[in-house]
Length: 90
View (tube, one colour):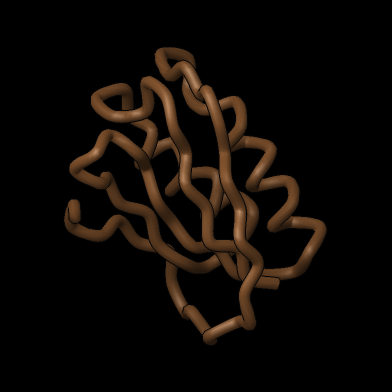
């Protein structure tokens, strides 16, 4: 399964991308995450459906200092991501 996600709220400057990186590693998922200039965190995650859904639940909560207002998700065809990484901001 591949999910493209966008997280809105107080999600930059609170360790959100590193939180997501740790969750992906723990669940053995691949993809990427980055900050967008509009204050949103964007990412893609690929892996078994049950683990992707668990990962997205973590996105809805975020780290302790985050205040997640909304998570938008668009499911796509898997592209064969082989690692999970933090991308440069866009």
